Length: 440
Image (cartoon, rainbow, N blue to C red; front, top):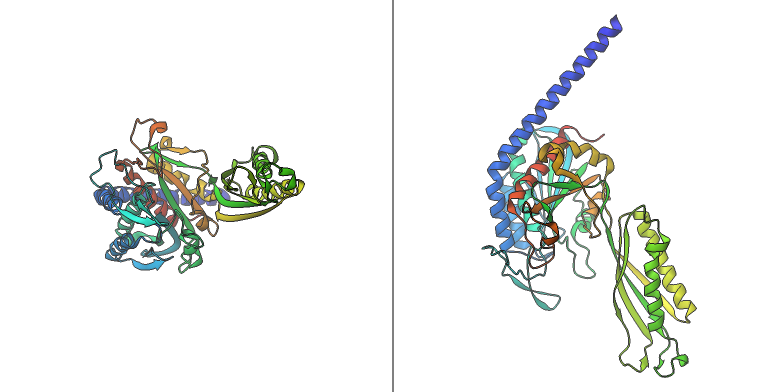
């Protein structure tokens, strides 16, 4: 009888805790929704201002000034000049608890906007990029990312006294890449200690998508976006007259065999049921005349993978394939592989832990499992250090055919601004829910 009374008290206690927790969650969500409604016009205005005044990676000076001014006005501890032009804001809640980070990328692209959508805030900015005069455009939605995170900072600052821990807002430069030979973006931020002091327990980020309908959030545990590595193969032969090729060693024919053989790495040497992978040769250069067999040929390309062991297998097999074929032809092959960006790998337990939050915010039917994509995202460097979750947010007008939506990185890129509020709500709820119930 005593045992049953104890069990009853225990279950009653658990139920009480559950009811309190549920009430706290419901109260916080209501408050976030109200504050998101209030900040939405600002988010849209910030996005338009940023879109009209885009800046390339590591040159986001005015963008950084705008962000820092806003965060300081909210009373946050602000650090500038992080990884050259990055900004970090720290919001310490009224109660002790874990540390969660939210990240947005800041940089634009060397793309000239077509303004086929007749936007009054279309970019007319021009600059010099790698010696060429180019237009500058937020052709990937980073302006929206910055504006949404500025909005989240305002929402959570208004809830400061109720926050059980600390929120670190990371505004990252140069996601699209740095100048050749430079370290930048997320990698440099990590090297400079952005995930320390205070040490971050988990990080969340999202990317707006022009081909996903407004109101939708898509996710995927494990490999969400591919790694990106560059390679260069230099095939050296022996120059000869084109009419007497037997007097030399032809690196052009040798390179042709190598290009063909590289395509069998994925199709014949890897377990493609595990994850997708790609090996692409993007350029081949060699020779100057029709009747001269050149002394060498150079080819460059990219490697994409959604699984780290497979990525390493491709590296090994690419080197072996190129050098073996060259040796068989009497030539030599030098292979250089430059690891650019790791796999954007969503922590499985964290994804499962936060999925109910996303479903509560967007609606169960609007949170969808997505296929992985073979483009890359340097958010992966944060995920290499701590558990991270990266999401896609719908930015396509309702009812539009995704196949006809203007692609990212193109002059016609377009997003529907009515989707920004969901991004604010999602990030704010992820932060608050994790602080209230961190992953064990």
